Image (cartoon, rainbow, N blue to C red):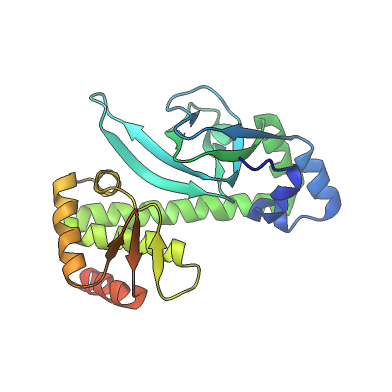
Length: 232
């Protein structure tokens, strides 16, 4: 795994707009930590309060039912903050975060995180924008779960994943492709239903499986399909 220094935080939205003095003041309280693939970064109901800024790798936010069924919420990539809720309200972790692949994160203790919020307005606004984005995402998901059929929820989730991976391009590649079980956990259904819907998308040329990757040739066509679902 590539070793990173705290200078890597300059590319993270929470730090990128800070002047040199503010950046130095906040980052001196951070420590770089490496995590192996499948390692637990934080567990559901843990009493820890550290905040992590992911610098490298991919992690997944999930909850597990009493019988071991996993409910996936979102994947987090470089530039993402995690653990901020417990740091702010002092309550146990609301979900587990596991490394999908090897990860590197900058770790900040709760008192230093709260001090940064209190003392540096630009940092505070970045955290508020993040929290606002999470609230909007949750509102959208609640609406989808309440009003949409499985096929519609799958298309909407696939579009979100594709737009994130596309980085402004008209097509996207998800690599490695999420498994049908992983997608099922994200949209509250079962693997067999996801498999059926992907077969239909493949027949329409909206997705193409190539090895371990899943290609979405046209975001425009997928977006039009999702917009049609929302209009129904």
